[in-house]
Image (tube, rainbow, N blue to C red):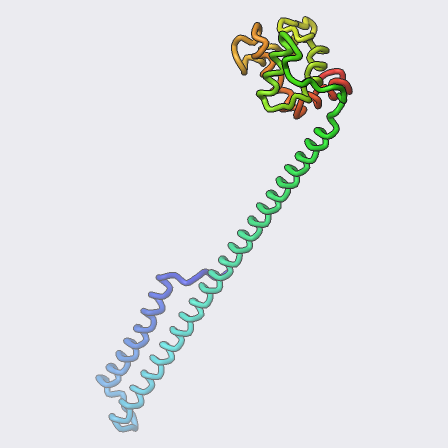
Length: 235
């Protein structure tokens, strides 16, 4: 592959150009000084030699300019090729980014659809709905109030009541020696509830807040958790 012209290359050509002119002038001077004029008039010989030197110099100039233009065209062609390749790479990167964004959007839509389907299916309880939390007492009343504060509707409390009645009987000191589960939501291990407050061993409100956060993160709502518990035996 030919290398692009360098500064030294052009300088060399320039010196060649002037070298040819200098050599021609020197030849003319030698001819005049030595008197090498055989059979022709001195003035005619000088004119002929001058014309020949001028022709050779013009030819050298033409060759120099032609080569220089060729070098310039080669550099321009390589530059255009590099720019074209850069555009191709940029287009490929943009296409790849668009495809990744499209895949992420599709995955998010799929997850949303699954959550909506799970929410619609989570209706294992169709009994009476309490009018308010005043219908309960003790830890159940506390749990009902916190559930409403966390943004769940009162219609979710029957499911939560059934779930935690099954798990612990709403006893905030309930402990399962086999699994290490502790408290009203039967967290495994119980120390997980320390993410809410340090009094997780003795405070029902701390346990209930943690349990509702766990339920929302995995099942969307208490009825979803209760349905899973019915189907699998655990939540």
